[in-house]
Image 1 (tube, rainbow, N blue to C red):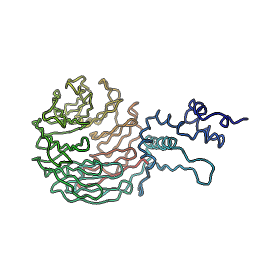
Image 2: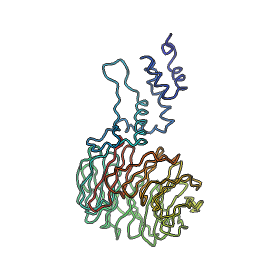
Image 3: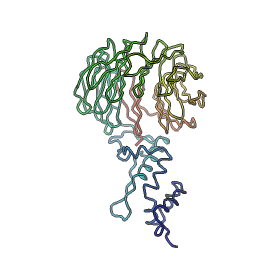
Amino acid sequence: MSDFTRYLPPELIDKVLSYLNVKEIGFFSQVSVNWREASNRDSVWLHHCMKNGWMKYGISGSILHEEPSAKPTTNISGTSPHFDLYVPFDTRLSPICKWKHVYLRMYHLTRNWEKGRFFVSPTLRGHSQRVTAIDSNGTCLVSGSEDKTLVTWNMLTGSKIYTVRGHSDAVTAIKIQGHHIITGCADSAVRVFRIDNGDLEFSLFGHSGSVDHLGVSDHDYIISAGSDRTVRVWSSSERKLLRMFHAHTDEIECMHCCGHMILTCSWDKLMVLYHVENDNPIQVFEGHSEAVSCCQFDEYKVVSGSADSDLRIWETSSGYCTHVLEGHTGEVYCLVYNKHVIASGASDSTIRIWSHSGECQYVLTGHLGIVRCLYINDHRLVSGGDQKKIGIWNFKTGKLMNMVHRCPSLLHLMWVGETKIVTASPESTGTITIINFW
């Protein structure tokens, strides 16, 4: 039989392969060396990466260089989550093309999340008191504690890089921005450290109480909110206060930043929207009957959750409440949304999945106690709650993919990346756990 790949131009071969799914392309590539080479082209695999929403991983390239943890202690499933696929040098086959490599790695990673294949790294013990704040850039983890220290960790090895002892009270907030670590402290200061060596670059003073929330905007603005009920906008380059807002009459419970906009939620039952370059608040959202505990917003809408058990959807520009989402029977502790759904967690031990029109699509059960933390991307929902439970959910179907029961400690803080979950314990001796799905 004649080999058509010898006679057709690459464009026509690509057209033929475009009618095949990934499994069929795999069978095609096993027929002969020529057919394998014909299917090992970026033009073939780019479409499948795009179809699955994996384009960004090929653009950033980070997933191609992701390495497994150096010192895993617990392999939960008995099946290693590690991915190692390459073409030997002593072969006439060409190396795996970039977009096929991206597809294979992302498919493997997605299956690890779905099937519960992960390693638990050694527990990180570097604080003598409770961990109060964490943040990560994917390779470096930074934790702050009531013991007044800041510790940076290598997420690949789980080893401590350095400890910073420049705070005079508990570290209450952490934000990694580029080459810098920004911290909020109970001593009322905002501090900026170099991430490579922990050197203090400068401090910002002005708050009269604990700095509990931090944000950044445009790589120059640092936004802080504190127990003095004020929101302050600082210039990182000029190292000075630009403006201060005092719109709340009670403590600020949550702050979210989006572009040049800032949204704060408070025990005074209000939300207030600000612009970093305006001297006055631009919108006040009023409607909840109890403290507003969590929020997320963008250019078009605001979603809020409250101790009154309700969520509300608002128009960002007008402040008009378009939907009231009723169903939880306890205080709403956390919420997240993406382009598909809104997810909320509450003290009633449930997670609810809502449409953006306010309809409850699913009620997710499995947690015991309060659902404290939520994370969502285009592929999965991750929830963290009491009793050491972490849930991995398919938010499109409402199905539990797996429940991580083996988190070695309780959790009250959670950070989620593409390959890892980091949790911090609320217990007095601060411990941190890294769960690696790669």
